Length: 88
Image 1 (cartoon, helix red, strand yellow):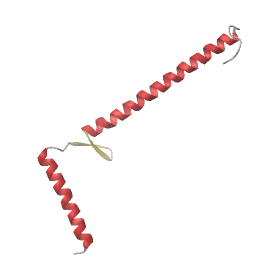
Image 2: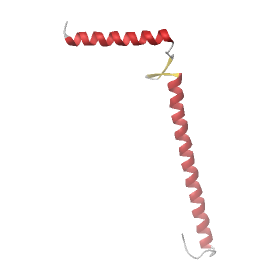
Image 3: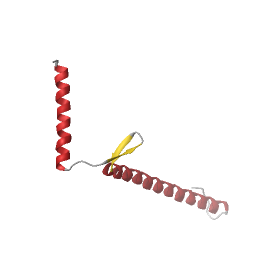
């Protein structure tokens, strides 16, 4: 046999042993098909946490932008009424 074949057979044997060891020790998780991918519950939870963090940071940025816009509109209104003398 060629060295490439032997290396491939060893890699397959190592992968099979790894799977066997994980199953025997109870370290496997059921995976669910999601489109072209499959995810375990812990992988799904990790993904959802990242999505939630992104949504939270986006909401915070939107709120800060809205507050800034409100302050600018308030200053503009005061300037137009003559209650302040210079535009900021």
